Image 1 (cartoon, one colour):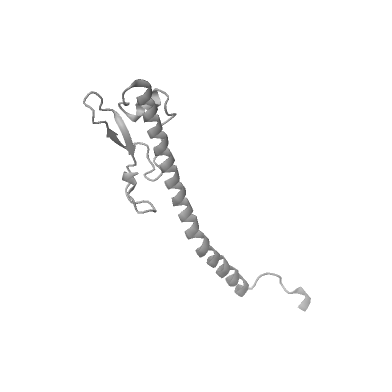
Image 2 (cartoon, helix red, strand yellow):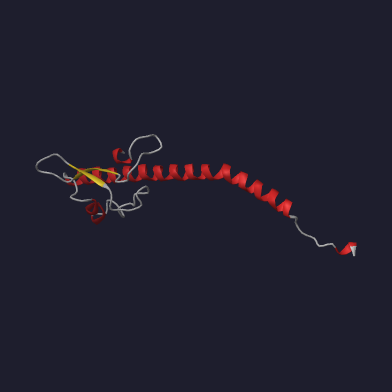
Length: 126
């Protein structure tokens, strides 16, 4: 009967494999979340650049600022109002209106997300 021994892993071998996997995960997971946060911040910066560029082009073409961000979409300066990758909604953008008495349209836009970026500056100041 010694030739009919069952083949498989012992409990000790499985525990060693699980310990190795756990060690690798403790190294990889924090890096993954840092990379994910970095990518969200990069997308936020790019969205802000695109919206500000669209506002500037609208102002250059019409001589006035758009009344709302939705007007940029209506006039085809943007395909859609981007979703804030930090706040995860498209309607929390903070608009800064122009100071001019004859034109009080949207002059600038900031993120409405709470918290600070990896560089320590608040998202609302970007």
